[in-house]
Image (cartoon, rainbow, N blue to C red; front, side, top):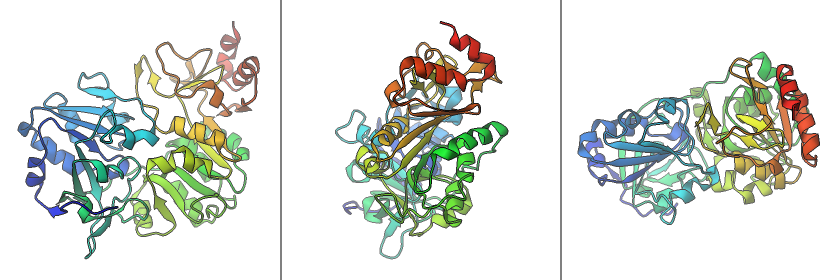
Length: 422
């Protein structure tokens, strides 16, 4: 990064006093979110008449969300469970946006130009060198572009190599707030997830480069790959299951076609064990979303396998990952990026994996048509491999009638007759 800012160590009060009234504040995502600084801003809320925040995926609920309209508002590109009770609040909004476009949306020339960026940073060395740590993808470019950048130095934040390496001079103000990083615990793998993983495993041969999401299914899949050879990692995140694959030798990143020898991601989310392991570890590199989720980066990956889930899939292969129970619950995140990226990568495959039902079996997640009012997160032309606990089917190159027949065959048996009705 080009150093061009003051890099001043200030008190929390001084940093908050520098925030102009009515600003749009971009909040670093994932485990890099500066919760301590946000709590301090919330405690000083009487200083503001209006302050707007924008964020992507967050592991925990930030304090200002508890005071929407008093005086805060919040925009999210990918709200998570901690936000569910405010999804309908007039001062909370969801922005449909691809992960690869996070920094573009909030760039000076974007539709939501950020006035301020707040993020965490690892402890600087004597020369002022530091790192954005576990979260890079959505905001690293904004450090150069935003009018004001405030960093929360946290002694718990590891120094992670890659595009997040920076200097204190990349920040206007730095405050010291130590706090534990939010952790993403490994998911509990149940019988359904394990069955889905068994059907997915044959589609991940030796030499594949993996992308995956959060949840029991990807964790079950990753756990099943310990006997594989020459796997690579390129995608949204690195978690504890990745650590296990690297340590057992299944992942060596030697046949990716790019970034060889290194696991590349936009974020690191896992347990404290993982955060300690990535500290100054040359086997890991974080990069901006334009590389991890962007077309040029994925097009250079060999045998790219993108593993994702969805809320529901229609019989034509289109999918909705954003809308459930009559309202929007999330944004598209990296799903469109990875599904398209897999379609153009050499030997790439896109896998959509999901339990066949929701609501304790009463609702089929394979449907005749997407729910009225739901967006099409993934269009039908991107459909490739679809997996439930009842099997796996390949839709690419299949007619609409063939797709419907195949998808019905892996729906829950209790719902197949209804799906077959015209």
